Image (cartoon, rainbow, N blue to C red):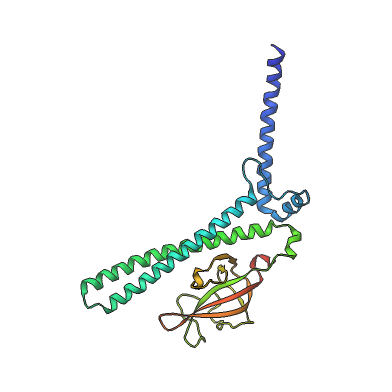
Length: 255
């Protein structure tokens, strides 16, 4: 056997062994990232590393890209749901005012189909909120420790529910995003959220609240201070309650 063949016989298992060790290290690193993201991030930050790239994943960059795509999908989902709800309102008016039984039946049938589509969109919207909340938590947990003192707290507009015309009681269903026995809040009060809620930027001229850009998610169980309240009139005589809040204590920060 030549030296070349002998060297090849020796190097091949060594190479295979190193490959296995490399893959095992990536696996252990991935598991460590899932369960101890802050510890891993502190170590990497001290070494000047902000992302990992082992040919398999670049975790931080991928989460950032995923979060951006989730926000875009959430905006599209909300816009579509709002448009379908407007169409449903128009069809309801046609159904109630039409004296033609055939037109009334067609309008009612269309409303039922819209209700089914809206249910699907609401379910998708709930999943998008959950996904964005998870991505947001990962990015916050893996942010450099020294940045936590300079980051601004979560702040934006949220939809809390529909109140009666006097704004003394919540109209249900649907359930409000605070405890049902909680009074409709005013500026300066603190509230506890009962659902994950999209945080939106200030609406632009000509926009409605639910058309404003989604900037993040306030987690269920979080406490927040109400900075401002702006009701939006509903067709049934009540008011949709939108509030600008600043999150004081995220549910993910609680021990």
